[in-house]
Length: 127
Image (tube, rainbow, N blue to C red; front, side, top):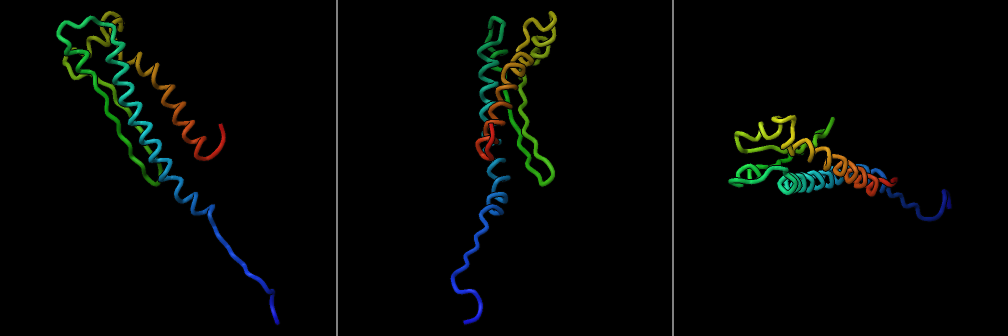
């Protein structure tokens, strides 16, 4: 008999894994962004330093998130904002004494990035 006897089996799971990784990463990061959008809104409403008179200012704190995944880059964005017309003044008047937006971003932002990094580390290895 000519040639090498036996069975040769080739399976390329690495390429398949890399091809699926971007979609999985985008899905996990999208869920992380959604979670931190809701968490930031809840935190802002809970920790707002003003005393409610009508409940409109606290009830008017909202967040939204946007996820755009493209071949070249991806965007994961959280917007935290007031829906009452005087919300701006709560943030800037009296040197920001009554502001909650920046305080929430400073508190929740690092936690969001830590979780996003942990998600990527769990997917691709590392710490």
